[in-house]
Structures are given as structure tokens and as C-alpha cells.
Image (cartoon, rainbow, N blue to C red; front, top):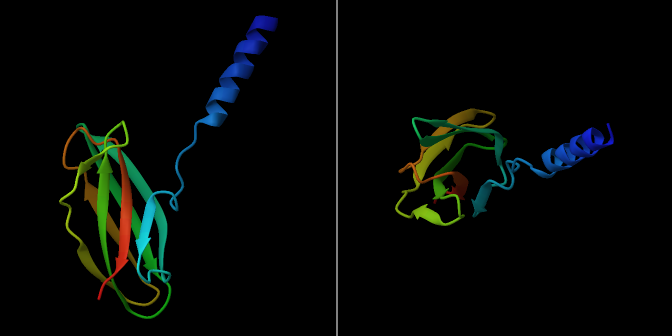
Length: 118
């Protein structure tokens, strides 16, 4: 019985130590993007390829923002450097869904970059 309690305790400690990164940790901001809020971010692996869907919302005046994804392998090394910035106009108080699809099956992690578009 004592061994079972120790095993369960170790299991719960291990589970509580593993955490999912927050939206803030997965977002890199450049320029004046304070009015753009990332309200949701989800990812799934389909056929070995990581796909990301993020919802961004404009909280102030009409904004032109650009975005791109950074893709990383399981060791944290950048896999792909040629992703282009994609411009997006978001009216005040509106949301937009953006989708990123990893360029290779080697990708296991990502970050979303947001930049003010000028």
C-alpha cells in the first residue's frame, strides 16, 4: 500500500511539472501591436504535419498588422527561415483566424510573430 501511494505521488508530481506554454509565451511582438490581442491559439498534428490556428482581435482603431510563424524542431532549433510576413487588415473590435502549416514533418513547436505593418 505504501509503495502504491509513493508511485501515485510521484505520478502527480510529474504531471503537475509538465505545462503547456501560454499564448503570451508563444507570441513574439514587434512594433506597436498593443491593440492586437491573441485570444486563442490551438495546434494539432495531422499526417505528421503541425498545424496552428490562432484567433487575433483588434481592440482599437482599424489596424494593418502582419504575422508569420517561426517553426522549431524537437531540439528547439529553427527549422525554416523563409516564412514571409503576411499583411492582414482588422477592423476595430473584429477578430480574424490565422492558420499556419509547418513546412516539414520535423517541426514540433512554433511561435507566432506579430508586427505593426507600415
